[in-house]
Amino acid sequence: MPKFSKCAAVALLSFAISACSSHSEVDETLSKQSPEALYSQARTSMELGNYSKAVRTLEALDSRYPFGPHKTQVQLDLIFAYYKLDDPASGIANIDRFIRLNPTSPDIDYVYYMRGLVNMQSDTYLFHDMLGIDRTDRDPKHAQQAFKDFERLIKIYPNSKYAADARKRMQYLKDRLAKYDIDVAQYYMKMNAWTAAAARAQAVVETYPGSSATEQALEIMAKAYGKLGQKNLKAHVLEVMKANYPDNELVKG
Image (cartoon, rainbow, N blue to C red; front, side):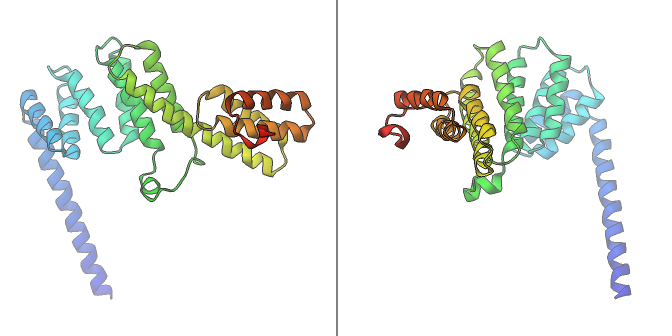
């Protein structure tokens, strides 16, 4: 057993040294190339879908030639490459740097759009999506930030070519965030915290109008107001439901 452990340790050490040597050789090779050659290599890697290699090349280019002829496009390509690599931390860092250094860039609307996409990506759990598992109960902070990113894009650049898709994504995010608040409201109902349940449901109606959870939110409000003895408030909610959801069980009679 000790002999095997020693061999394994030697093998691992050799691998680590080899890996470090390999990276050093790659870095040295990149550092000797012209900005044009580096950018051409990065674009080829991007087109082939080798985003890891593209990032290494783009980072070398950005570091070695920060004021080179491709500086702006290099930063934009890095943002996209990090997005494709599902590396939101690096993506957001590069997005915020771009916004800070290039506030008047003609591509700034694209960068705000990418910020929304990256935050949406942070909110996505691919494994759950593949299995059809509903995890709208997870922390919504990234979804909230993505909603704000798309909202900012639409307000500042309403004619952007990315605005239409941003609106569609906002609707998805609106439904996701509303469903999260409904889950919280239902938890409050189970705890007999009727005031908190009504407040949370009301927030859904006011903050996410037109979401798929609106009817459910109104149901919770009606039930909560009933439990609280707030007859006038309950009657008002039921009138709203009758006008918008006439087939709902609470208003059929």
